[in-house]
Length: 105
Image 1 (cartoon, one colour):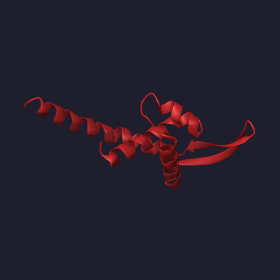
Image 2: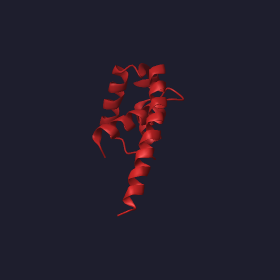
Image 3: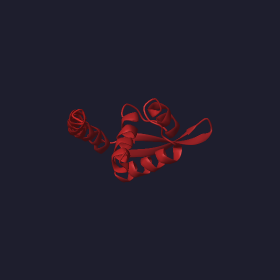
């Protein structure tokens, strides 16, 4: 898969995983695991990128005596999910064309 396409999709997966409630890294990995394999190092790279792009915010809170970072989606992050859904419609049309044309071989 094209690395840029995959990167964009993973960003949206992470945003979607925190869309309904603030959460932390390990929980994000658990939430997306049924759909996509995501390593911790990849996740934290994505989280830093999304924070820099102001699509999420981070707060630190103590949990069981340890500090844990919780991630919260911003309006810009919510907008990115909606933009992706619109983009995906176009991608699916292209996919349909490719598959249809592939049947003529």
